[in-house]
Image (cartoon, rainbow, N blue to C red):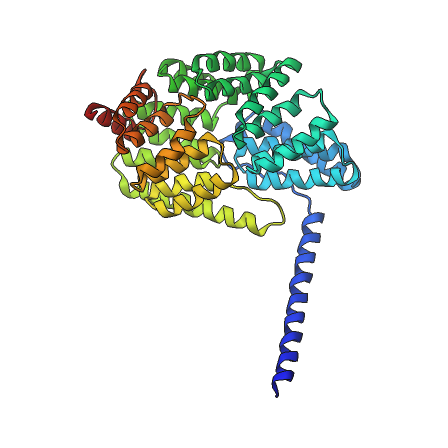
Amino acid sequence: MNKRSIYIVVVILFLVTSGFIVLKYKNEKKKNEARIYELLPRNNSSVNYADWITLKKNASTLLAKISANENDLVSKMKLSALYLQEARVTGNYTYYDMAAMKLVNDVLKKDPNNFEGLTFKALIFLSQHHFAEGLAVAEQLRQLYPYSAHVYGILTDANVELGHYDSALVNIDRMVSIRPDLSSYSRISYQREIHGDNEGAIDAMKLAVEAGSPGDEATEWSRIQLAKLYEHTGQVEYAKMNYTIALSNRPGYPHALAGLARIEISEKNYFKAIDIYKKADSAITDFTIKEELAQAYLLNGNKEEADHLSNLIVEEMIKASQKNKTTDTSGHYSDREIAYAYINTGNYDKALEHAMIEYNRRPGNIDVNETVAWVYYNKGNAQKALKYIKEALKTNCKNPILLCRAGLIYASAGDKAMAKTILQDGVKNNPVISPVLRSAAQKTLQSL
């Protein structure tokens, strides 16, 4: 066979193979478009929530309506809302965000300016950490529905995540002027926290809790945020009280359990904390809870179990990230979270890789800058860390974790005066933070 014949055969094989790949992709796409995502069974303590039976019944009814009438847009929006709420309860954001987005896109194909459809699409983008896309949809919503408080709430969230803090303040002011409620008060609280007014943040979050219904997930989530503010300001008894109330109002609530476990850690009751963390971990898919459990193992002297869990967290995060890339959806960005997971395993090169991926998406965000700075500090490069920690401090946030990390970085970089000031601010009032970080901050402070 001459070279020309070989070339023709190769081209034919390539075209045939490519055709099969394209056909397979089109078939998979059609399959996904035709798929109806159902409510998944719960296999944890959340099955005991009073709303679970009602939720299952509502999902079944809505699915039946959609199956009977493909053009039932109202039922599709109701089912999408149900799935978004179920994602919050179970932590299974990957599945339910995908399920909700499928329904949302179906509706927007038929009604491009549908308010609920565009609102849910923006919320799903934010949930998936696609903040720029979420902001774009929110801006579209503002043009169409300029008097909706919900729209300004989404604009606030998107701008915060992208580091547009001035724009976030403008939008939250507009939101609360239209509708002062749990959603707006909780956002005001976060704005105050970002800008260093922790007492003001506590006051606003109290209003959010009071505006909600006890036992409702949104109310108890706000109560958890209030408790965390008490943790960070050293008001441990108030934190414990609010976690206990949340647990009473919503039995088995994993975020309340995790909060109580953190307090046990601060009191050096490591074995008890591990037991509580395990209960929380069994109730929801949440890598932060798993990471705190791993730290509890380490503090309790079980390094082998801590290392095993930390490595497992990385494996599961990477697996989920790769799975998202293979689906015909935008998927979840989780590089900042993966960076911290790699820090916990001591793989600082991989941590930096993922931290910089996140930084390139949103270089103005203070949390992302803190992450990059902390990676460089752990790599032993305090000078590089300085650039990012300065950016992380730009809003005057008084989060004690941020302050302790910043103080350690300044001390390592040789700026003892700045380190002392920041570390003193970080450990005052004895906040509930990682014992490892607290010890490092206190030892460094004593040496200055």
